[in-house]
Image 1 (cartoon, rainbow, N blue to C red):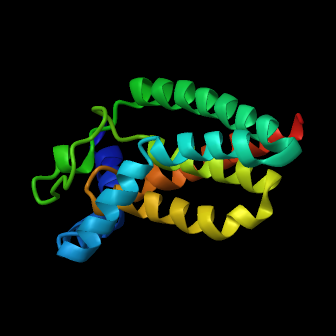
Image 2 (tube, helix red, strand yellow):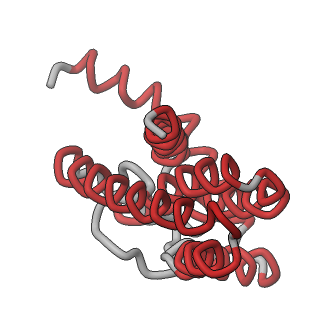
Image 3 (cartoon, helix red, strand yellow):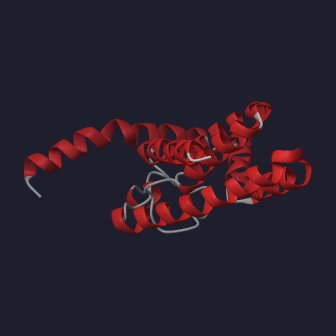
Length: 178
């Protein structure tokens, strides 16, 4: 890589690293740390599995369809995000910068994209398209999950923003087919 290319990448990455540092330091406070650890763990899957079960059991005539749609979009998101992580192999912020602390253990080695955010975005868009009132619950949960990934030192903001774009694109594409 050329010297100019290296300098350009460093210039672009500097503001993002500053955001990582600021959010990671803020997350060291006990109250935010507890909240972000909890929402991150919910984003590991339990919230989405519970949502699928609840929709299948109590979602009236569209519940089973919505739950199946969520399951399918979940599998597609999983396959795509794993492929992207293997392809990009971007180190996590805490692994690259000693000044950033991982407040919880990551589920895998690489940073790009945020699988938690990708799934939260896709699941929320699909679920809310079937049940708009869920927006009041799922929009804040999705935002907290996305923030938690940076606060906890596991992702860069660009990992999260890319995951939002990918998750939203997949969800909207899947909705256009229904």
